[in-house]
Image 1: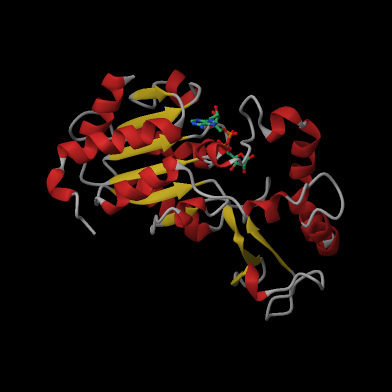
Image 2 (image 1 turned 120 degrees about the vertical axis):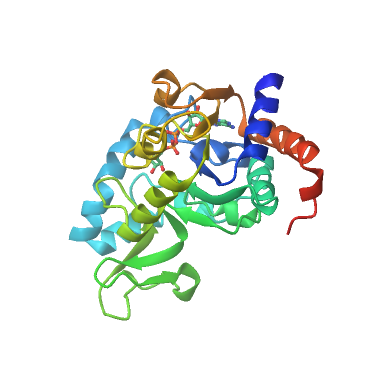
Length: 270
Ligand code: APR
């Protein structure tokens, strides 16, 4: 493990345009359950996953019922979304923010809706599956902060008059095209992709590493590094160059310490 941590630090220090992709695994050490890990929400409650697959259609057909479920007043949603707004970053989030401060990580593309990357200080975050901090109008595309609405009167309405939903991408809901295009552009631009805490089984997000891999390996290609509690299809199919197996909250701070040892001149990088 120590050798791989040194290897990852050397690869990050040598990169000129690194990006990081994250999934629910980076937030489990903040107390937010993941989905498919041993104690994951879908693993422990398959009914919750079945409900989640109905959510987008429920919004389209009955926005009030959607909001009653999202606010935990009915159904299996345990007010999951409201709780998301009360959790705190862990050392893994702070390590990623530090890599951005050191000028190494240019973008963090996350599947998580918990807002913990920003709370840890990361500035360039793409919310591939949206965020609980916002509401979105499917008709005109407007986004509003949740704090602009009391959510007493359901459904909250956009200024265009149409119902608003959480700016969270539900199963069967299209990824907003602005985010999808931007994420693909970063996958095609980076020379290092650090993938943390994702099972890499949900598409189209899980296609981003293969897009980067299609640009080849070695000096003119892309270095793809996984940090994850378990091997994933990316590991098994050789899409990633190597997996550092373990907890992101423990591994990433060690990688950052090693990067700072290699790049002392960057210590005070804004
Ligand atoms: N450190 C490293 N890896 C971890 C940790 C940890 N502390 N905790 C869990 N993991 C790993 C798990 O072993 C698993 O491989 O993180 C991965 C989390 O995978 P998922 O639970 O599938 O979460 P994610 O990949 O983000 O899911 C993608 O699926 O349900 C949808 O919209 C949801 O965005 C989510 C998408």
